[in-house]
Length: 395
Length: 108
Image 1: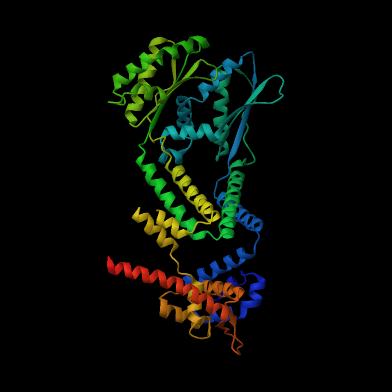
Image 2 (image 1 turned 60 degrees about the vertical axis):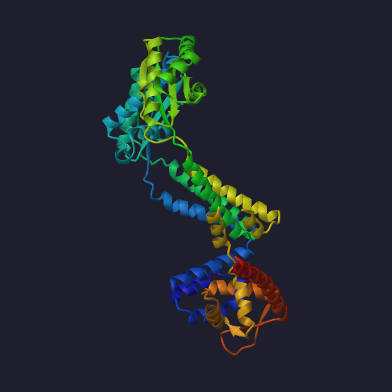
């Protein structure tokens, strides 16, 4: 540990070492070497360094540190391979393409694909299937129009840590479009040779951005000498915000997707209008006993019920959120039944979901906002030169 | 709210190492290790070497303490006239707070 002290002394600024180095070493020879002393000497070096650094240098140092830490973390992320297939669009119009896209991105098809290809083994162990499908849609499947291609073409890709699995899954996705007579395969799914890892660079970028923000806060607090006040108000506001966030009741969201390939857009719009009319909303509310003893129950139901046309206008997304998970699901079921009653040709693309986790409140965000408000308040108080005792008294 | 107030007091309570160093040197010249032992004895606060030298650097820059010539590797410091004056002001301010608090406690 004595050797660690020597290394730590070299972290102090040279000018400081030239003036105090000898006597500081003499002191360190006398104090018992403990972890506490080690951290104290390290903290002292950091403080001395930051006192002579310009704010710009502090921000740069934090950004580099953030990037290095994020880089190390990103090394633990496994390589990912993206396989791609290109499909030449035949005579099919955009409406047909978007209907096929909805079919490919539907929960039922993706669930079937996950089971068939045995994808996301680890994730399925600890996440509900609904979340796994969402993650697959959000992060791993991409469909885009190939720019400037003649004849018109679009590409579909799937990324996985397993190269062969990426290729097999992309083949299945592409064949889904071909089977729907959207076009013919121009370029079959390839077996990716090189890992394609935007995630790793994204982690490093996010790390350096966090570094820059932390560096700016550090330089600001250090310059204003507002550390204690910032810590106190930051912790206090974060705790308060967390407490408030627990007072807000959970809300669960249930959704479903219906499609009617035969119907035209105005017809679908008319059906939606009928189901979301005030009479219909009132009927749903009273049938399921939503917001009991609340005079504004109908308004609340219509605020939280979203029935909207998707992409090509022939598919409908139904979404409802409510403090009770089962009731949220039953309302969505009820709306789906009403829609089907209006138009028997509706096909259920995504069955009514049973929400496993609440959609709101987002407690981490609320707590983070509390922390931020506390830190900002400390800076404002110091800038306006109000002293701490006045604040404590005011509380 | 009392809990919040107590938390803020806990995080911000003023155990300023510079004041402790001044108080220690008011008794006579001392080198770093002697200051650490003295402060632990009279204030029950264990200052780390990094914290101590942070305070020494700041106090010397302000001209409140000054190094004393020594043959030893250990560098003793002495309180300057300016430092003594600052300590007196600081102690007078703290004293009035303490006296008021004590008086109020007796009345309560």
